Amino acid sequence: MIASRLLPIGFAFAMVVASGAAAQPATGNPRCVYPDPYVLLGRDFAGLEKVDYRFIDTKAGQLRWVFLSWAGPKGGTVFVLSCDGHVVAEHGLGYAEELEFGPLPDPWTIDVKYTDATGTGLLERSESFLQFDGKTIAVLWDHKILDRSTFPNFMWTGRQDDDRSRTDTYTYQWTYSQPRNEIRVTGTHKVELDPGPRKHKAGSDPSVVHSSALPEEKYCFKSEANRFVRC
Image (cartoon, rainbow, N blue to C red; front, side, top):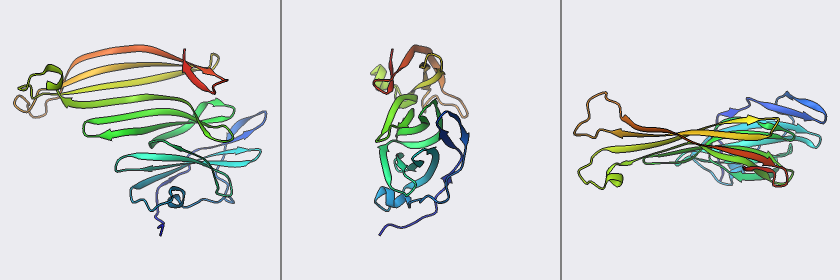
């Protein structure tokens, strides 16, 4: 039996899309059906932590984006629902951390920052532009925004007496140019070395031994592929 639980539900933003008119803020249609998230998942999932809604009104009726996020480990799925509660499209994602509307207004895209990998010494976060193309949820662009890993430093030095730990952190930022319809990505790579338990002092921070800029990346939107590609 699928149980019902009270979960935090986000209704922060919605958009009304009208032909020839700018999108305006809106709220979810109270006449629409809001399915139990456990029914959407098809199982009673104890790890489910969060449900986020975003709304887009179209000529065919209101479409609801529903992001279900869970822990243990972190993961998630996004659905597009019709007003009557039926699943129109589904896409496996990660744990949705931040949601807003993306840069392409016609049809409107969803910009989601999500955690896609966690584990011992590992954290990865990415950002995607999602768009409902009438049949499926299309991924217009996807890129890492954080990639952090911590491992014993002897894996790099080969010295078994090296008790330090090494943390590699890659961070990325992007800018979008509307006239050119392109995305530029910049990033940094930082290496930190913990001095190790034998030399560690209370309150001391790992020392940064290397920090460098990553090569710039450029992505251009290709309408025939309906996505941003490296250019």
